[in-house]
Image (tube, rainbow, N blue to C red; front, side):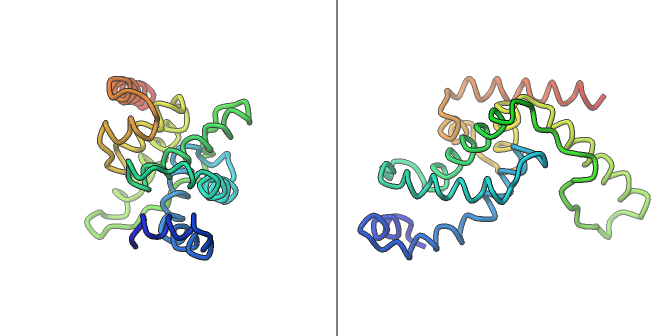
Length: 176
């Protein structure tokens, strides 16, 4: 998909092409909403809100960054607004954990241990401050560079480094 061509077509009035963007990024946005917001927010509603806000923001897109960076920025803003609106930190419940694909490299006992560790990690992630969680999720799970994270979060690279450092330190404290 040639993103610039699609965006220019949408801005010229061919709104049917917007579906291409939604199809391309829907799963990515939903996963990021879950990783940042946890199970305490309505992931489908947040994903829909991201695409509504993206559509409204497309005229402001200046093609200086990748469309994915722009979408991640909107996703982070939407989820953080929702967390703030709920006036609480959203933490995943014990029964909602991202599914883990069984591996033939581990026996049943090892798989149970790995699943329990993943559950504990996910719960600890949910207890991190939203900025720390966002930076760590983008860096660890989405392989973003510090510069890309700074673009998404609209902050300095030094702040991103600090957020990731503190997130790791807090996770280590929570998990030990």
